[in-house]
Length: 271
Ligand SMILES: [Zn+2]
Image (tube, rainbow, N blue to C red; front, side, top):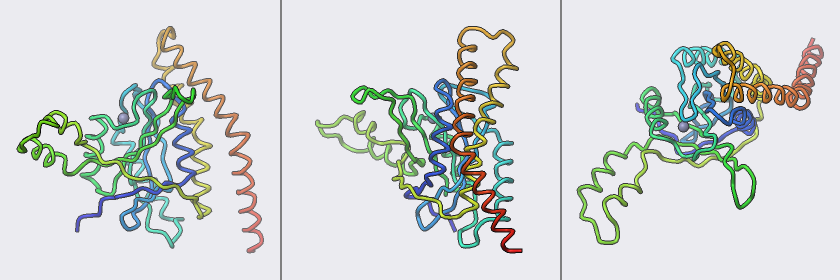
């Protein structure tokens, strides 16, 4: 039986915070990661994410290596050991990436990447975090988020346009422009109630400096001559790394530590 395609997305606020913080880590190149969750009716519920270090950095696309996908699948398998039994089993349900300075809408490359994943699993969604887009009326940087899947009827809809008689009001070109190769899904936000998942997502946030640091170190290793543009982007990565380290130390770590000590107290009280 073919699996149902999602018609809506429910995103935990914790995952949204992790992905958004990750997206803000680079205003030069796109960042990426995978999404973990499950299907509930026709809604895809996203409860966790796995940040992926980029082997190569590009301003207009991201590439997930097959080894990264396999590692992520193994990680999700491991999560089943402690997963709350009241929930459907966790699985990889999508990917996310950032669009710094450009439109939040998916590019042709994004749609073909999404299509490739949908061949493996139809319960698969793409999230795009639009960051560093200056919004002139508000004089501030605008943050946007979209969820998309490939449009399964795209070819039929296009063929339909070509076979149709066009009125003088709309040309063939205009009619084609209205048909998109993707479908945007509505997103709703939720709070995570399950303690182990909540703690996991918080650890993802704490792990962000490590991901950024690893990439900065790789860039440093790749640069034989640190100068010009490369030097600026490296300085940006390191400055961000310092910033996020402070942010995590001040905000996230105390919450995480208090959770851990509460867990220890609970364990002792059970003895
Ligand atoms: Zn993209």
